Image 1 (cartoon, rainbow, N blue to C red):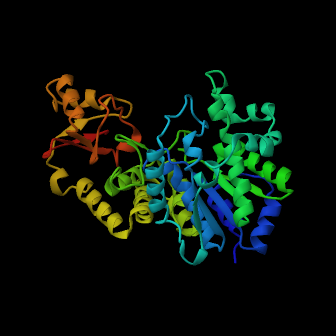
Image 2: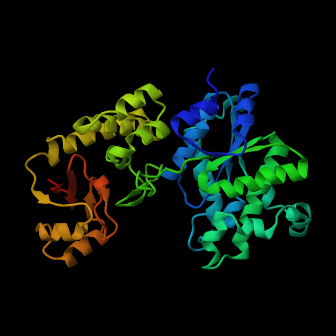
Image 3: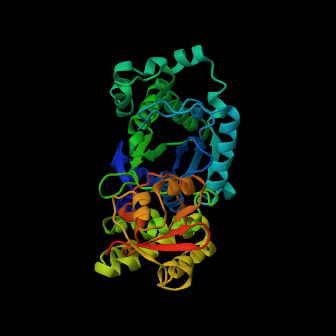
Length: 404
């Protein structure tokens, strides 16, 4: 049987690892209990979490046991990683609600039957900790200069890092210690921006329990130009169908850049790598076949086969020259990098920019069947499928944006 480390490596998941040779050997020797944490900063997981869920699914398929950790405790502080300002403080009710939403979504990806996986909330232990006891128990295991050297804190140092957020690394490290004590957890996984926090947990286990545990980070979901994936005209690309419709979700992946097709097929589908290589090797107009497969497979994983098929059929109707968005609707010249409002005003869709802004504020404008919430939205390459995007004004008026 293929070692799961090799599977993750071949598909491009692995960014950093504390001890590759030892961890790979461990995967061969035993069923490894590992964990990934999800802080409840919203009531839905988003595309950025999707890659972590896929890594977890590959691990489970190889026979290892996931611990899905929702941050009912860490969510009270908020991870400063990647932030230029302090996160909004959530109420206990918000945190509890968001954790329940996460649990339902994660269960679509991970099999929790027969002890194949565990779902826990770190609020169970973090909220019970006595501050002085915590300082005496683990405080001496952390040096301030080592913590300040971490990238997550360095980015915030000049603008101001609160003492509240400074404790986040300690709390995440303590999670790993607690999970090792309770469940024999030997591996923490997460995005590569979590490397410093994961290392802190590995070190805390070593210093407190003389226990060898491991850390492994996956690549972040970024485009070929280094920018994060998962932004749409309506905001974040959510995994909740009520926040991002299956059609919108499908269209996002159908419109990824050609250069990102192989990465997305490798990381976000279960297609065999031979098939991934075949599809991603397509060139010219043929690459659109690969994008269609990508969009269908990803939507099927997140929303189910029926929703994926419906989204695929809707897209084919919308862009295939039939239905309401067929060849008879008006065409407007457009280009990536231009404001949508400017393009539509010049194309006589609106009599004035003021009219356009009012309609957008009233949720009366859609781009590729996604409500446009920002009057200053700028068109990007991902908005155009084969050089075309569809705008709907109100309920019945359609316009085709074309780039060539």
